Length: 557
Image (cartoon, rainbow, N blue to C red):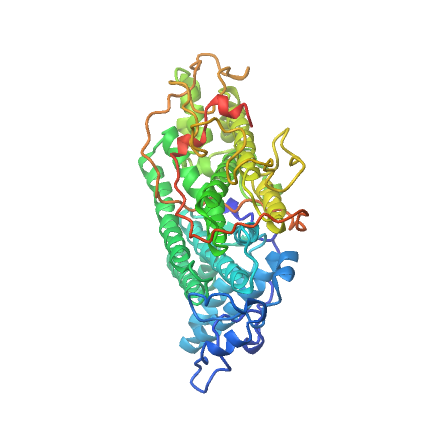
């Protein structure tokens, strides 16, 4: 993944001093019982159960634990990012103490860098999505809230693993104005050895740093008290997320080494790297903690998948057309790495028969020393073939489709409003005609319509099943090509061939975090709580191409 995608990290500046938090006064303590004994062990579960306060009378959670020290749900609602950061502060302080006991050099060189990298995480969009999904699905007791914050912190550590190792794979020396971790630790020893040896050492150390972040994330999940009846599903989702992250990154690398230019593979990669990892899985984890029913979870995830796809499409555009100074990343990173994105794959399909355009694209993709003039030639091809206009239009339609699905779900107003705003911000804004939510409850469910039944859905067709596109036309591509299409380009675009189903498919690591939105105040209105606590099934994903729904469905967006 390219280094450009650190949108969830602060701007350049001096790294903040690491804050050691007194463990005895941790804002969140999930292992239950009385004070630690001389051997460091905790007391029994009974002491926390007796102090459970508002949670008294609830079923015992899957693991013994209690929320003593938790500031409260309303406090977290006011600033989710800060609440997650407090959990990270406490957990990282404890991990650093343990690392120092293992070896001081290891602690200073590696563990401290992992902690600093994670603390500098900025918007924490994934953890906010997880929190607000839990709240929107009716969760709000202390056990669910503490679990959501801890899982959110674990997701942030998982993102640290992803970004640190991505920088190694992409040979990226910087991340958001700072030296990448492998470059930083390599430079520490660079004066004593040859540059190539120092560089190799830095890369190897960064792989270990990513592994350490992943181990710490797993520690957080394993030590989290989960609401009754949710443990199996939450742990399965978490396990799938880790596997999907690795699988998605491998597919990205495999596409580069094979020189794949397939549009269907590019769409699949986009779905795995952003739609699932950055949006849908966090939503599913939050819904699982709240005990949401399968229909609610499925529709919510369907909305998130489309929002995530829209973000990735817009991010692909931004990578090519971005301003270096404005984004802190070099423009054209995907082009130079030879990555086949939806944008470039569509341009190639549209340029069939245009030998000059194909020559420009073939020459530029994978050219690490591509000049600014060469990048400008690629930009011109993307405009002339209509690929740029098509991708931008499709991203807008996906956002509209996602919001339409979201508004059909009966959700608790305490979380529905903030979650909707966060999804809109994650997609980079609301498409024309969709900025305002219709009046009524956050779910916009007309009286008398069954819960979780999307509005305007044709009878007899499942909610998440897009209509079949006309044969021979790239799904989602308007029948009329933009006026800027290069002469000699096919009139109907690329033919999207059959693609294997991605049910239970690996969801890959995204290039980046979606831009974060403001933490909105809770919406008003009567709560429509989800009362069925049955664990939701794992999200079933259609093919990536199915997200590029037919023109008829797009027209309703």
